[in-house]
Length: 155
Image (cartoon, rainbow, N blue to C red; front, side):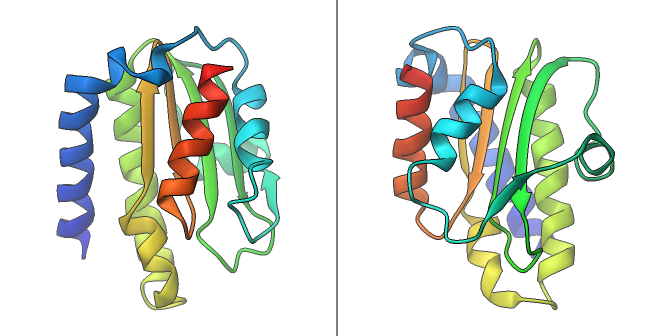
């Protein structure tokens, strides 16, 4: 399972480095991570109540580095689902993708035996990058989440 996640993240890294820069996600420079996160949360894709992760939880779960200048991370308020939204404003998109890859590995370990039904979200993350922003959304409907993220980034 860990190899599947690593392979998926590697594929995403290749895709985003090759094509995301010119897409809709790069339509405008994002200055406020929470504005994007709120727009994604309001799209109706998430069935669990997502709450903003406090800084100590962000530090434990995401281990952000100094390339991340702003962030908004929303996690399951119940802890029962793997639904999550992470918006990272960064000077290093590759570093941000590595941070998110580690988070996916952590979620896999937490949910594989606890709630195996959540693995579909973890194995099908939505990643959108462009112009200094990296967004990850984990939901039951990756296509709708992708649309919501792209719309939020278009502003």
